[in-house]
Image (cartoon, rainbow, N blue to C red; front, side, top):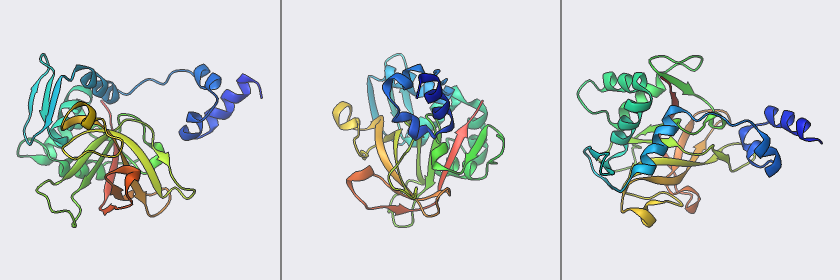
Length: 233
């Protein structure tokens, strides 16, 4: 197969297939523009000098200080990269700083055919791309004051089984409990960083219904509804 034919085949294949293509073919593909959300997360990553997980927002960009929790991080990112989407979450909360539950509820109520109020709901794991949002409400089995969790997709999900029921997802978030293959223990005690989750899907092509916080290091999973969304300007 010549290079032109290989590129045509890749254009018809899934994103996961393209990741495993020969290096020469991957290099020849046109660059895909990063979403504003993914670009904002990368900007923060390059600016971080210190970070901690706290239930408050103490951000000093000039000093590179980012002390926040997952929802405060999501609010900061979206307020810069997708203001309409952020405004929708603010309206949902109606009281002050949004919490993880608000992100989940806004995404879960968004349409799947076109964006509304800055949000498009995604229904398939394979459609996720860097900058997309994963949010869930706190599972009934988890004893915590937190209302759930919200994170950003850092890399396209990787299917772990033939049926598409288990997916590995590299994410960016703020947490005090590291995920699988987490950057925080090497760089910071908590706060902003990258790690790997596992998401479980009961019906292939459907919404995730459980997550594994530590990725592939354990099969323990927590059942709850998980909303997948894309924030747009």
